[in-house]
Image 1: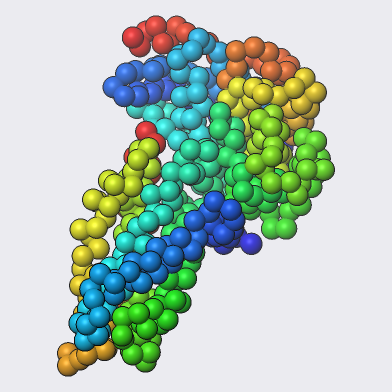
Image 2: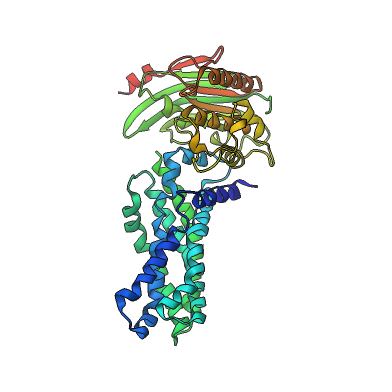
Length: 222
Length: 214
């Protein structure tokens, strides 16, 4: 097993074990979406219209939830020092941690999305499309959040700073994610353009996120 | 480990932290089989020097080079060829002793399929391999962290007060490991206040430097 896979494996194992926080994102997401109908009232048409937006907002907030601990725990127990001394570039190590984070927080959330459609009066077939937009868009959220997590690593209460730093950067993802989901459900705008932009945002952050986060970590440990 | 001559050489090394000059004009050289003990009062910059060699801090002036060694080692940075044993043990409580060590051995680049058992035996932890690290005492966590040095061969060991929390038996174990490491051509740079069981080591006193800096 190479260092990259070993790091993904370790982080996933840590997330799944007691006190890890995997599924916390999915649970938070479920709660937000399940409470919405109670707040909005029994207007089924309205629910169906704002459904994709609610799902995307829930996914956005859920993916930020555990992000501030991503590097903080490793920093506190000295692991981060050793991670920086590996044979693999720090950029790759950071990317491995982000992938593990995505697999344990974002993926469960995408899996339960089709079921949540029932709560928001969105058709089952359309929920598949919404899940697809989340699948394409959530990597961007994780990898943009990665930069904030790296910047906030030495702060005790980095969570709030993280939200302030990261949320503005995720606005484009939110816009195109909801646009693609709406196009798939209601139309008449085509699904293709917003969805491809969403994919482009994810791919770009996949490249830029680890580089920026690694630079932030190197700077932060001075 | 290769028996070729390896040398860690520092010229005019200086480090600045938070706008304060911690030390400057530091010169030393350590080669295969040698040990350097860094001494000095609290705040003299012992840990800073070790972290700087480990690549975890940036030097503000001077040169630091690791020359010689295995083929291709010239391209590797000093950090990639050294082990850093700091005050923190880098042990995850949720993972077992074996899982902790296996992760670090893979991550730090041990040869594929290298067994971790010998390293655990070397430091008397083999029987605890399946125990979650949360149940370890401070000394046992320290030993788990030391097992990493044995499991992955790297020529330079940077030890920051390595004997803290260790009982006398483990201290002599560590002394034996350090002897073996040096006999195999390795180098040790350690920060310490008291004796840590290194025979015929040289001393680098940081006090004067700190005085010059302030």
